[in-house]
Image (cartoon, rainbow, N blue to C red; front, side, top):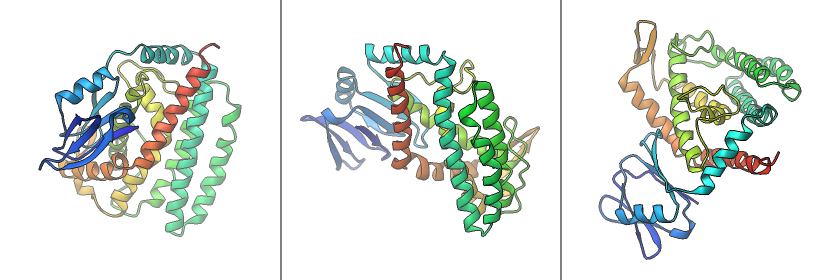
Length: 316
């Protein structure tokens, strides 16, 4: 099992065969049999006793350190030959384009389904179901092509076309008309919505990286995105199907006027988010991503599927 500790100021120790979590006042909040714990996720200001550190190292329990907002910081991991071999399988199999195409199709199908679900939900709530029907008709043409694509480059192009179709709906479901959106762009972000989308995706990539490390995979070696130096390419791959979770957060922030146009400032060609607004984004990200164990289970399930695929295809 994975053990997640988010209580700020808490202490994690080990005694009589159990991990215990103690709050700053010294009260034991919970205990867990040490034999059941495989990974320990520590968020923010949490103290880990020396005895617990030694036990984790001796028993190959991975300790992942993340900020209180979910950014992956680093790990405490003992040397394990099995983990090295899993990375070796990853490096070898991700060189084979047919294997990369197989995994990419799975990720993109889930992403497209989640994007469609988000559009449907917002259109239904705003009595714009005709808008959803138009989007569905356009997007289905692209979706039908995914099983017939024979190269990663073509899949990237298909994903780009689907995303363009998806983001073309955004101006219609943004209720706060102070915000204007003319399409997705990356760096530098040309408007407030692109700025906040990019920031949200960055938070999600860092969060997912922690789970990739916990599962003994290399976050820098991916199968869909081009493997660029010093970029968490596998984290970006896994993130694709979960992007709509960030989109939903951004739409909530804007439509419910939790942030406003005055929360941004322009500097040269950049649109920057002011400090006060960053805290609002952090808080909602923590609530709906970091504390969302249903989402965490989906991330871990996807990684488990990839690991299974690596193990089944190592002799090919």
